[in-house]
Image (tube, rainbow, N blue to C red):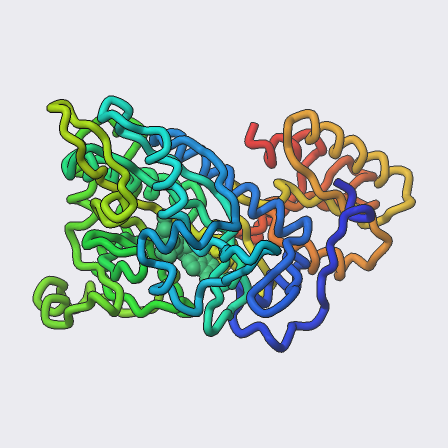
Length: 440
Ligand code: 5CA
């Protein structure tokens, strides 16, 4: 992609309304544009990151055996009357009336709709286990939408729903999602700690929130410092294994959000120098709620003895759009964003310092073509601006690598490469520069 054609409306000034760094940087880097309180358009740069995150989430859900479908954003109120949540959900739910005076709503979550799909088609325990998910926009009329896309009113969520015959099988389904979450966040370059949490309007008695630590987070959290050194289980751990030891390990130390925090236990279980009391961002939340919805909505299957029993359910959410902000909170410096390679909107920023100069143009075209052939996504700055401005924009948008082509270097057959994360610069021949950024 050439910068001169790319829609990248960067802002020079820091927008006054943005209180936290991720919101500031997303606005400055031209990733999002607010349309009304808590509702945003995703501009091309932001959209690329959102789609990359979505794809990693999708791949890890699929690897865990979940199947993707797509449910609508608009749902009939009657389904929510069956579960009793139509009245309970309160003002966070956006209620809509269609032209036939039917009560509809913009879905804040999908337990009712998926349970309705399930009961319409599944009759026998032989069709279990089943885990269905979608990645779809949700609407919650939050009292205080803030921090940009972090607490939006419209936001993108991955929500998966598991159906099992009994509590033991449902526990395994929960453990599988737990493992999938550890792997997902690791691929996103994030350290997310599973913490005991409240279940709120979703319900159930077992749940974990996955939290990334950040001073700007909305939740107060307390945990053992050991978690900072825990890594995701390696690829040899399979979803067919008994995963209880993985889950035991990852829940072996104290970790709780403020609603579940027990100061006496915290002090008793965690040595003073290992106590972390800070804030965090909830990037995912998993729940086991048994037959809460299947009982009220009549979602039953015939078991092996021919008896009809309600199905055991869990649900598993990831805040896909919130993750964009959470990653920036975890990975930036004074100059801008530092994208982990896995979610970067482009892999390389290619800067031409003297547009119009034949030698520079030639070198840039050569590198652009070779990187393209190697499957590397390049944003080439072919604009006519000053060098200082070009460097500042590249640092702001945070691509992992920069290749800088200038007249002096080209004369002696070299270009400069800069790694955004470390700031390290090297002068290399064209081919060596290409090899460095492609890792070959
Ligand atoms: N039905 C379940 C998940 S299957 C559910 O709705 N869970 S939730 O309420 O905890 O939301 C799941 C995730 O969505 C949260 O962990 C959070 O990362 C994200 N999320 C929730 N509310 C917002 C919001 N207002 N803005 C951005 N992301 C949000």
